[in-house]
Amino acid sequence: MSEATFGRGRLLLVQGDITRVTADAIVNAANSALAGGGGVDGAIHRAGGPTIARECAAIGHCETGSAVITSAGNLPARYVIHAVAPRYRGRPEDARLLAGAYAASMRLAEEHGLKSIAFPSLGTGAYGYPLDEAAPIALGTVAEHLRTSRCIEKVTFVLFSPADLAAYERALTKLAT
Ligand code: AR6
Image 1 (cartoon, rainbow, N blue to C red):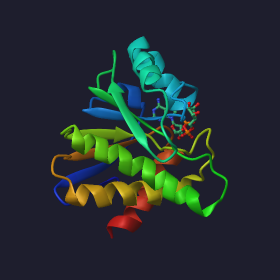
Image 2 (image 1 turned 90 degrees about the vertical axis):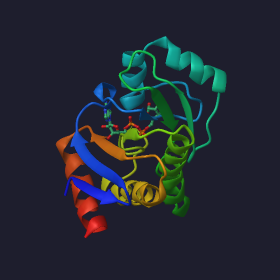
Image 3 (image 1 turned 30 degrees about the horizontal axis):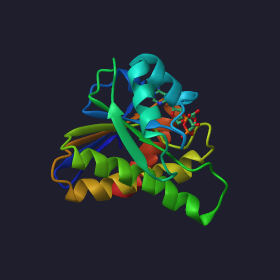
């Protein structure tokens, strides 16, 4: 399953490069120093230009399991929400922190009155969160927020590889049926 509705909001799964997505906000898989890095973080800073890094430096820090918001520089999106997933260690708090990163991003989108937001698969690259454990946490947390959201109409998960997309499709099928 690659699309489902929760409350008045649509949740979509697509394969692609999040830096090319037009949405009110795209979410970055950041680190707590907001210092940039590889993966989707590197791609967002490369495509967005130096404004984003300047705003990140001014904010300075983001707790693991939380998120901050900046403008989006040269990207087609209006905002970048920088969310920090945990480094996976198989601890009970990993799931809470991963859910926290998604929930904080949804709250920021809501506070800014945004209608559309796009997520990558937070934590499942350099931070090592197993994909099949992360996908139900990601989708479940976002769906819960969509059900009661006043302004968010569309959430798109932009998965980088076919294997990532397949894992999220399996998780969405379980969640929505
Ligand atoms: N669009 C969508 N997804 C992407 C893109 C892209 N352009 N590029 C990579 N991905 P990661 P993390 C996928 O490592 O695990 C950074 O150095 C990627 O295939 O970007 O949260 C930060 O600075 C994977 O599925 O994020 C942090 O230090 C997913 O995005 C650390 O890595 C997340 O992989 C964060 O690690």
